Length: 425
Ligand SMILES: Cc1cc2nc3c(=O)[nH]c(=O)nc-3n(C[C@H](O)[C@H](O)[C@H](O)COP(=O)(O)OP(=O)(O)OC[C@H]3O[C@@H](n4cnc5c(N)ncnc54)[C@H](O)[C@@H]3O)c2cc1C
Image (cartoon, rainbow, N blue to C red):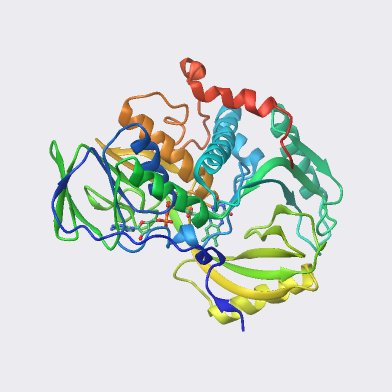
């Protein structure tokens, strides 16, 4: 019987105390998943005094129940993004993903001895075992054309190396071990003077200058608040999900299998298909064998079918697409989808920064969010502020206009980065 536990729990993390006294800091970061920990890391690096609190253990919620693909390829297809947000909007979102992968790579090189970061290609392909329609293939070709025009390294292939179906190959995506990576960041946060508290739930926030954050029956006075709780989102006005976001966010449960594979079953890469809900696969090369992380069967939270039945269906499917696998473990988690395919990252109220709606790209968008929260607090420009703004009006029917004065932003070396030959992949 497969074990019920996410693969990533094999890296243990240090324990942190609960908050037992009143303290004062510059910034309180609520939620210690990838988003909150990265925010605390980037801010303490700049000398900001940070308290990072989590109601449970660090990096144990969705960050530990993921499949850890690092990609700029969004759930929303590129041609759809262009239709909704225009060429500038779509390109800027994908460049954000690329910039986040580069940021994770740099941090992993500096700190992440257990991060297992590796550049691998990603393949967006039609469903394995089904005859691809002409429209499917045309839409893949359309995405290639657009991505190429943005400067990304992509190619169309009639036969993906897994499944033999038509696909787009994206060079230079990546994979990592999320808890291994965050172990290094947590240690750096502490070395940089940050304070980390577990079993410390945010209870309420009193506005004012300074603000007072109530957590674990104690008070933290601060100038700024970052809410990185993914779901639910709590803030100055209580449960934001019940209010502002009621109509714009939907929760889905996604199911995952971890399986051992004979060597040479499929090239090491990330794979996603074009169906909705989509199937996703990550193949890792290990010593003498391969490991497959296979997921899908997403269903709206609250409408879950019998979990056993879903896992059985997913397992049958995995045996079909990758004969010879041995399923070792299974786990599930939640993704937060937005109505327009863009995350909500930015200030929701004065001095309150929130981040949610990452869809299946929580690691790149969570990293981008951390960069944006740091820049907002320090009063710096950031090219993604207006595109991902929490209070943006729906873009449907209109397009987002890139703010030209931001082209001098240091972030725009990312464009140069895209023009470099792919490192691996
Ligand atoms: C099956 C699956 C596969 C996925 N695959 C990928 C992938 O391949 N690539 C990718 O980029 N993304 C993927 N994602 C998405 C990604 O895992 C998430 O978006 C990401 O982990 C979110 O991180 P986070 O830090 O924002 O939230 P979380 O990791 O959920 O952390 C939020 C934290 O907030 C804490 N919290 C909540 N309320 C409070 C409170 N009141 N007080 C204090 N603390 C609180 C929680 O305890 C938790 O630790 C996947 C998700 C799932 C479920």
